Image (cartoon, rainbow, N blue to C red; front, side, top):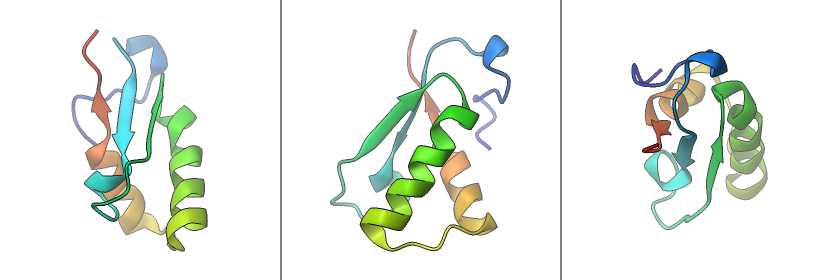
Length: 73
C-alpha cells in the first residue's frame, strides 16, 4: 500500500482517491473517493470486474493499493 495512505480512517487526513487509468485501461476516466481503503476497495473491485472483465487477485489488489492517493485537505 502507498505509505502515505493510512488503513485506519481515524488517522487519515483528507479523502483517498483512486483513478482506474492508473492501474487499468488508460482511456478509462472512472475514479472513486472515500474516507478509507476499506470503503473504496469494494467499489474498485466491482468496477474492475464489471467494466473491464478483470480477475481481482492479490497482485491486482496490491497494484490498486499502491495507486490510491490522498487528496489534499
